[in-house]
Each structure stands twice: as structure tokens, then as C-alpha cells.
Image 1 (cartoon, helix red, strand yellow):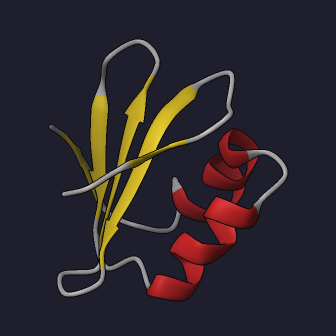
Image 2 (cartoon, rainbow, N blue to C red):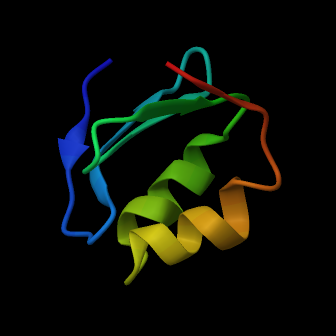
Length: 69
């Protein structure tokens, strides 16, 4: 999955596969998580958010299944 680098104190890169609705996030500490069934619009909102980490915490972490890769 292609990921784009972002300006964030915690998140290094973010990617999204619109076919599988998988959101993939790599953190600066090297860990990678995949969140499942994340709609394209949520990914787009995440990418536009003033704080990627805050958006992730409020709108994604508690709402979508995930796995550490």
C-alpha cells in the first residue's frame, strides 16, 4: 500500500486502499497499524485534519477494527 508522509508529532505516514477500505498508519516509533472498513471520506478527512493524531484518536481508533502489522 502506498503511504504519504505527513507533518505530525506521532504519525509518520498514512495510506488507504479504497478497494479494501484499509487505512494504514505508520508511527514515528516504527509501529504500523491497519484499520479496517474505513471509508474513503474518513481517510480524506484525516488527511485534511489540522492534527492527524487528534483526528485518529477521536474519529478512528474507537470506531474501527484494527490490527498491528
